[in-house]
Image 1: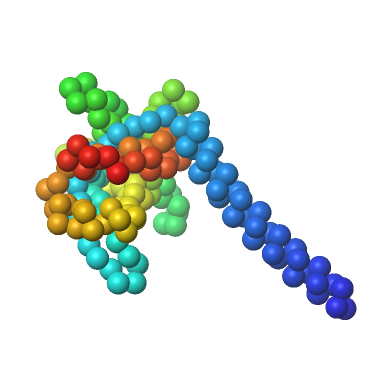
Image 2: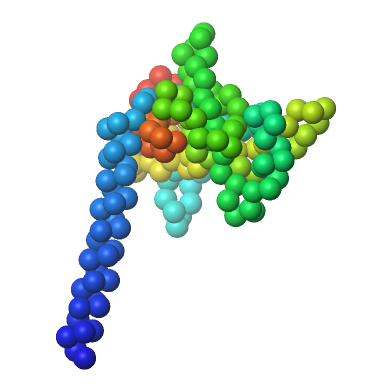
Length: 182
């Protein structure tokens, strides 16, 4: 009985280590194989005694059009699985990426896209639009950087967030605030 219990404890420990290695491996795979995209955000620097210093980011393009003909399919999705693929397009003037539209079908490999959670769907004048949650709302800072950014970041501060994209997954690669890279 004791041998069996020891094997179960060892298996549970090994499973936790393997899961952690899988997550770290996925982040490194996205970082190494991903394509770089720079998006512009706005935000502010709150302080939370329990969670530490972070930037609360908001994307001004969070209300985007849904691909034509996808309204019925979107409404048929289960409430707990409302992920959409958000296509990014490059602005020719600034070179920054912006959210173009959302689709329910996974795009091809040559298209830059994010897999995002979506919120409500609204249709006015046959223009279906959805609200997306790109899951990059909070960017945690190093304590050395947090003191410097505490008063510098306000709601109207333009923040450029550098992302690595790979098959809809993304990792924050860096951040630029007022021309200074962090």
